[in-house]
Length: 352
Image 1 (cartoon, rainbow, N blue to C red):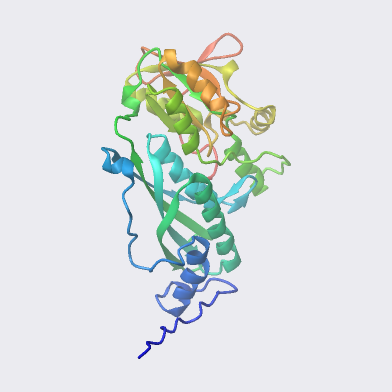
Image 2: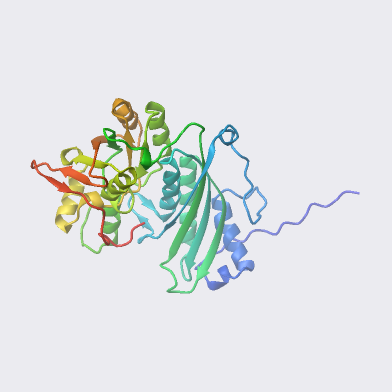
């Protein structure tokens, strides 16, 4: 007797706008999840369970450690020059793992969707996330959706969690930074914050500035290969480079002396900030990091950055000092100096 193949109902691709029924747990929600996200994330061949089932990589079995991070993303507009909320969510999480020395492997995605959002927008975001994951060499393995009534969210909020593996023998942390270490950033500062503000049209400015949104795990591996003594790395997101330096200085009990003349700033960003009264050191970035390396490895780390596509404009910006602990001082182009403090309040509306 021959067994008949099971009948698999055809997957319906939803159209139009998101309704509250798409979050109700029934057929409409199944159609949204399977028709938009399962297809886009490449999960169609695997059984859909309530959890992802993962095979540990060899590095974990050989004495490596797990690293995990999570982050939420809210941005207006959802699509902007150089990126979108999907790329931000994937690469932001990848970068948080990478700067800790982890090799990113898996991501989860949770989406809070406002009733009335065009399903076409969701499809664009989902496909962008898949492309971003592929470029970073990671997999989106599980997720969740919730729909809230109109006014309960601003179109779309995305939360991602990421898991990676720190290879055995690798240890990075702000507490390891020492006086004499060299601080290096991988490229032009402030692009993301400027791009988002300009895209909103609130300042009536026309500019070609694009976000620096990028995955940095490949760059980090290049740096760690060239400079294995690297002490610490941090990505400069909200609060910009200034907040990053203050955080590391406080955690390590050291100070920083940075040189204004060495900061990688494009003329367009300088002009943008001068017109609007912003300080580029506090503008958000989404593809920029700072690494802190022993002086004997600084040249190798800088060269490795400049050889990578996301580090062409890398620059040494200063050095770690004895203190006072937690104080960041910038030597200005005019021969003076000023304290670079932690960001107080909001310099810009929420952008990431």
